[in-house]
Image 1 (cartoon, one colour):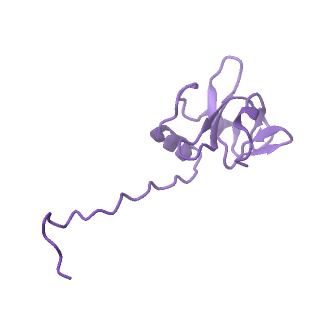
Image 2: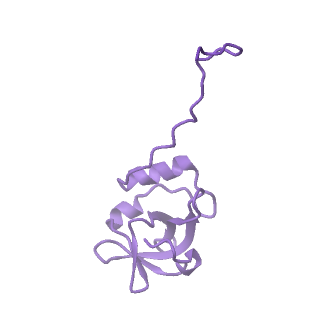
Image 3: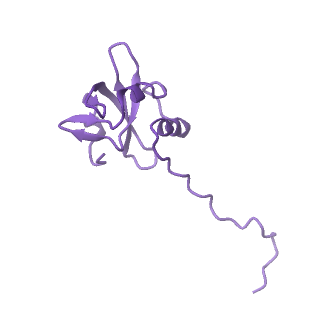
Length: 124
């Protein structure tokens, strides 16, 4: 999805699955902690039902609605973490796995010289 879209403009839009069936209405948008880009949308799936988290990438805006490239049943079975709270990295990983999306590997730890003894210089 384009990251230049203001996430506030997504709230209230309709969301549809890959077959064009209506999923519900976007209640909230969650931003990536590192980049600030919109990453997840919470979609209200019915009057008395819960919100389902859907990934904004690879979803796209089509004619003012969010088109999510997954089946409605998969979306409704997404892990329920409640809305209005921060998604932890562990919860995001669960969502990525649920949708079969690749999870970026964490950055490698900083390179440190743990093998050197303090006060001992290596020969030059």
